[in-house]
Length: 115
Image (tube, rainbow, N blue to C red; front, top):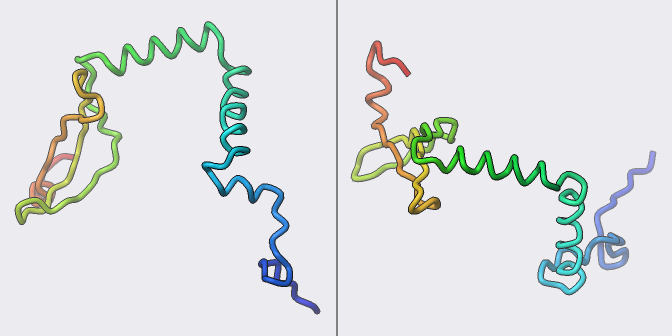
């Protein structure tokens, strides 16, 4: 049985028709990106989409929004203590810099500690 190696070589270069997309700053890629991004908005967009978007944004940006506990837990060592990032609260004045609740990992290991 013959085994084919489909990896490109100098003698048989890659025949990928979309290899030009690898050049993210290339002229063809820069023309294609906005048209491809507009396709789903043309299909799913409209006034209902805008209303839903605005309603959800108002809910998530409200200052009384409960923390986003579904954020992944991250472990860091700060000042020699192992800490876990447990919750992120969005801030209206700096949405890209949320408030962070840190907990030491020893607190999680105490007997009877509810998660």
